[in-house]
Each structure stands twice: as C-alpha cells, then as structure tokens.
Amino acid sequence: MDDMMNHCRSANSYKYFLLVGALLTILTGLAAGQGCPPQMTKVRQDEDYSYLADGALREHWWEQVKFVPFGGNDEWHWTFGAEFRSRYERFVNDEWGAAPTPDHDYVWLRFMPHLELRYRNRFRVFAELLSAVELGDEAGTSPIDEDRADILQAFADLRVAGDEDLSWTLRGGRQVLALGSERLVSARYGPNVLRSFDAADLLFHSATWRVDLLLGRPVAVEEGVFDDHSDASRSFWALYGTCNLGEAKGLDLYYIGYKSDQATFDQGSAREERHTLGVRFFGQGGRWDWNCELFGQGGSFGDGNIRAWSFASDVGCVIAGLPFQPRLGLKADIISGDRDPADMDLETFNPLFPNGKYFGEAGLIGPYNLIDLHPSLDFHLTEQWTLSLASVFYWRESTADGIYGNSGQLLRPDGGSDARYVGSQFDVVLGYAPSRCLDMSLAYSILVPGGFIESTEPDETVQFLGLEFRFRF
Image: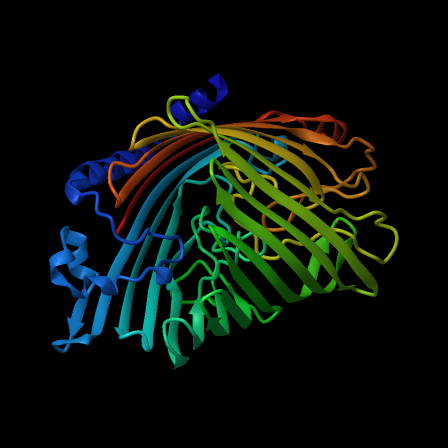
C-alpha cells in the first residue's frame, strides 16, 4: 500500500484537478432529489418512463426531460438522458511486472447522451452517443480505453403483433447487448468503452417467457471520430430464452454460435467456430439469493475440435440480526483449459464477450482456464454508504494451458510449469450514492502471486487503486 501511495503522489496534478472537478459536479448536483422511478441500468434502452405521461408524477428536474410530448401529442414522446463518468486508475506491477509499462496511471472520462422517440408501445427509435477519452497513460491506449466520438447505439423497434402479455418485436441496428448474467454477452460497462453490436433481433414476450433470436457482428472500436465499424472477422448468433418461474425465480436456456477468422490461445492461432449451450437458474427466497450457470462448448479450432465447458455460481445470504444488513456471498467457477497444446484439439473455454472487470475492480484476470473461489462480505452502512470486502483465489484448471486477460489475450503462457495456484486477490470497495443520479466509489486491490506466477516470472505483487465519480439521469 505504501508503494501505491508513493506512486500516486508522483502522478501529474492535472489528473487530480479532473477528479476535483468531478467531485464539485457531484456536490453541485446534490439537490437532484432521490426519486423512485424505474432503476437506472447499464443498458439504458431498457428503462421505460411512459408513466410520466401523468404530469403529476414529475417531482424532480430530470423527470421533465424523460417524457416530452412530440407535436403536442402524448402518443408520441421524446426521452432524453445522459451519463458522465470520471474514473482514475493506478496499477503498480501490472501483470505481476510483465507488462511493458508495469507502473502506470490514467484518467478515464466518458460522456454518453441518449435520445429516444417512442410511439405508444408500438414503435421507437433509440440513439446513444459515446465520447470516451483516456488521459495520461504511459502504457498507451487500447480499444477499451478511448473512442473520442462515435455512435454507441442507433436502432429501431417495431412491435408487429400482440398486447402487453404476448408480443413480437423486430429490432435492427447498432445496440448494446446484455444477455442473462452477462458471463457470455455483456455491455462491458466497467472499462471506458462499452461494447456494441450491429445486429438484428426478434424478441418474443409472453407472461412467462422472453425469447431473443439474434444475429450480428461486434463493433470494432477505432480511437478517432465516427470511425467505428462492424468487425468483419467475427460474427455471432443466438437463441436466448428466459422463463419466469414465479416467486422471484427464473431459468435461462440458450444457444450461442460464434465465428472468428483469427483466434489466439496458448496452443496457437487459427480460425475458430464455437457453439455454446447453456442453462442458468437464478432467484431469491427469504434471505438467500443464487445465480448458477452451466455451459458446454463444441466446434472447431483450425483442423482440431473444440470440447470445452464451465460452471459458474454466485450464492449469497443476508445475515439476520446484525447491523448493516451484511450479505455473505460465495462465487465459485470452474472454467476448462486446454489439455495438450501439442495436439490439434482445444479444450480452453471461450467466454465470448464477457464483462470487462470479471473478477473485481482491477480486471486483470479473465475467465479462461481457471478454478476460482470468491468469498465476499457486503455491508449497507447507511442508506447512502456501502462497503464490500472480497477475496479471490485462483488456480489453473489445466496446467498445460496459460492464463488470460478479460479480452482473451494471453497474459502468461504455461511455460512448462506444473504449478497450479495462480495467486490471491483481496479487494475493498467503498461506495457512496447521495441520490439516484449521483454515485462514487473508491476501490483498492492487491494480487499476491502464487506458485505458477513465481515459477514463470516476473512475480511482483500487483496493486490497484480506482476512484470513480458518476452522474446519470
């Protein structure tokens, strides 16, 4: 921790100026009011403010722009919204000292305004812009760090049949997708640049089922202005169904197909075609909540076959009778790795489009070739303050495969090591949300190397510091 603080003291002062500016923005906006409308989400198109057609329900300033009649007709209305986020991150000994610039820090600035035009519940057009810049990183920028200005989303919905209990909807255009628990298809909200797809979607809704039929390509991010484009080297298609089992319980059943002209694993690089079948059971009852998922994958990698699998679980319990409503949680994952890099077949599981910070705020290790245990303890200190304590213990599922980052890049090849234990991670996150529109967080993580990192070197202890301010309406 002393090394982290010494590095932070040496950082350029303009970064702290940006953070102070963000803090002043938050303090200025504290009068925004609490409000009790639909919960804001990472995927803003899922929010519905049509209830504000009743003007008597508009109590706060931001509600005035959530339902704006178009042409004097309430059947047509505009919805406006935006997000501004400022985030400071600092790494010491990134990638255990193996990164080209192991000690580096930066500020992420992100602005995302959106606009929706809706006709009753039959038709809508949704557009969202993204401006994301990174300041001061000695390590340089990547597609998750910077996209100066571009179209994040631009799609149209047409409900072609049905009523509130049974409907079919056609959707086409650029869109951010978040399927299920986002273990396979996520918005990648944590990093600076969200992930979007150019896709066509047919959605079916009934009283008990939602089914998505999807076909699309991920968007390739360029750092300039309005230069993002469909990634012609990759495509995916999916049939994803969610069943409401009642009593706050649900079941997901799905198939996801994926192609990549050039995929890279510890075994090497080749064309990849992968087919994923999955099932997820989730819900809550009493003091307990759970989210468990089983995946199987087949397909081809070059001239070889793919046989991969994974199991993921997240179970928690609110401890009754104690102050601060503590929730004790345990996540556990088993994610297959390759058995023999010398043969043509591949057993490394591919999470396709996973969360950008899959195992905590540092976001260093990705869900490939791992066994992990992730205990946590969360406290609601007050209505506005939260505290989260967590640790993650990592092992390689296969000692013939390496470990990977969130985007699938090979962090550390197997190097001939028989060691299985990768290391231990410890996280502390303090959160503060003074209103619906405003929140901030402070996070510190430390990743202590285990036998595998020590045997392949370098093996420095990683430290991470993150400070975030966010304003949304």
